[in-house]
Length: 277
Image 1 (cartoon, rainbow, N blue to C red):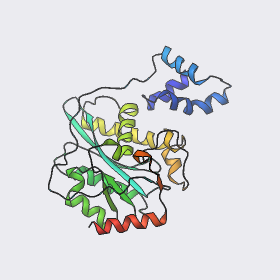
Image 2: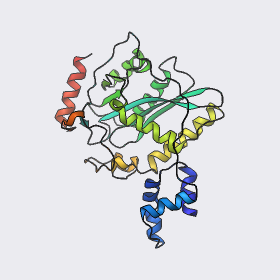
Image 3: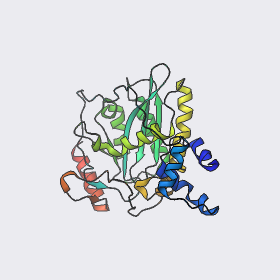
Image 4: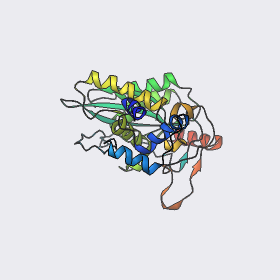
C-alpha cells in the first residue's frame, strides 16, 4: 500500500483500473500477484476508491452572438499522428470565492495538453488566446492542422480567429450543444477535475500552481486508455493508429464508417476551411 499511497500523492483521484496499470511494473519487480477484482477490493477496504464529485457549476459557453460560426469538419475523423487535430474547451475551477476559468487545448491524437491558461472571467477571448499562443509556441504546426471547439463567443472572436488564420489552421466548430461533438475536450476536463485537481482552491494563484502540476502529471505520468495505456508524451511522437481501450469518441452515430486522417483528407479539410473563409 505504500507504493499506492506514493502514486496517489500526485494523482489523488486516479481511478482503480489505471492505478493497477501504473502499479504493474512495481508489482512484477516485487513478485506481487493480485488480480483486478482483488486489487479493487483492497482499495475499497482502505477507502481509496474514487467517488465522483458533484458541484454546482457556472455556464462557460455563450453561443448566442452575431459572430460567424464555422462548420463541424471532424465528424468521423480519427487522427493518426500528433498536430493533425487540436480540440479546445473552457472549464470552470472552484475558488473559495467564486470561480476561475481554465482554457485548454489538447492534441486529439496523443491526448497531450499543449496549451492552457487560467483567467478570472469570460468577458473576453484573452484566456483562449493565451492558451493558443502557448500551443503554437510549443508545437510544430503541420499544414492542414484542424482546431475544433464549441461556438462560444471567445472562439468566434476576431482576435482568436485571426490568430488561427495567421497560422493557416483550419477552423472547425460543433453544430449543436451536444458534448459528443467535442467529446475529447470534455474528457480532458473530467480527467483534470475528477482525478488530478482538488475540488476547491483558496485563490486563483493556488489554483494556477496546482493546474500546472496536474497538467504535467497528465502529460508525463498518467496512462490513457484511448492511447493503448501510454502517456500523452509517449504517444505524441508516434504516427500509427493506436489501440483504444475505451470508447471511440470519433465514431459517427447511426453506424456510419469512421474515417482515418490521411494526407488526402487533410488537404480536403484545408480546402473546406478555405471555402468557409
